[in-house]
Length: 475
Ligand SMILES: Cc1ncc(COP(=O)(O)O)c(C=O)c1O
Image (cartoon, rainbow, N blue to C red; front, side):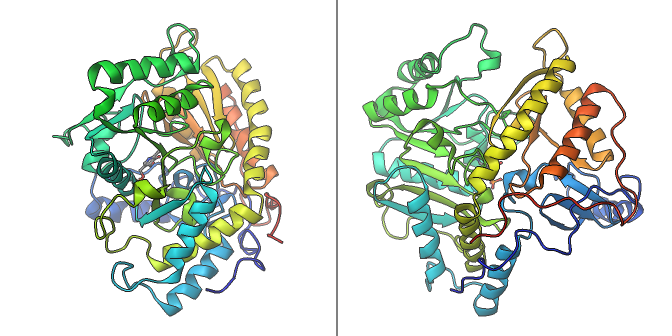
């Protein structure tokens, strides 16, 4: 393995960091690709932006018409180290010159082992750990359930209201929201039980995290039986469900109940992991040490890689050959992960996420004072959200969230929506975005929320470029 990361900048110097609109959105070339798409791409695959991306990096996505959008989505929390981060691209290039695939189950290689070493070092807890590498988040969740069942000899899997764990058959059963994730796709896997989550904004009466955990565990005890449960699977901050941060004490109380009853706690850190929330893992905020952790998304800077990492004795309860898959831990994805992890650890990306929170949250709170449809500003680190409602009520306003996201896109800013009720705007900027570019994106978002005309994007190539953020190249 070659260390290619230490000499490289965080963002390609030839990719200007600016919001630039040369054409209306979508431009003519994007419209042409959209016409081709309609003829060959399945209608079930939807896209947020109506443009087609040609290159990306730092805080921008550049489309085939040359329009440059501020990226507040990171490919759904994936390109936290930046899109096509030079260190990641170089590591992948170096790797694919040597091998593209051997299948770790056939002819193993060192990069897989090195990624598992990094996961053992970085995931919560200092106990002995083992990992298995996979391709997608859903595959990691499926494997975590397999491992938990094998290790405990129990069948039941407990998940929370508002949960999102993926789109495969088992993970559809674990995901809460029917439309668009489940409707018409059943029958679903059995032995999956859903219990109430902690969603502070929507509690009819405010309750503590401990009380919310007791409410959940009481349902498990009455309706499932604690001794039947293999694992409880939780997102420490719920992602697709609406960036819901549970009340303080919820996760520790749930972890304590699991320990008491021999139930494994699985933290699904697929969206929250790798510096995103201002800690390496979101469980770290409350000192929770899960038995198993699922990771994906940010782990490899944009290449498909996922993992289950857990206590050695639990992971090793599975017989040889019981885990794996043709592509899991592909060498190019492992090389990307090693370069990305080097950046998380040495370019202070945890600090970058915290600085983004400190910069963005006061502005969002101020806009919440002026925009009556904003019910709550919440999140951790660079995983931040606004929940939108009909003013004066808690009635979710999905149409307003869609309007804001659509108008932001028309003005060169990519903002995603999420939430059980579809009424949450979520901000997931790359952790390397520059401060000025982030401020400019917030100027647009604020104006759209307040019904004002947003500041115009630059129209020509001589538009000022914005400095790249984070802390510069790793030492
Ligand atoms: C918390 C969580 N779990 C699982 C998944 C599924 O990951 P993938 O889309 O890679 O299968 C996601 C994806 O958004 C996620 O946010």
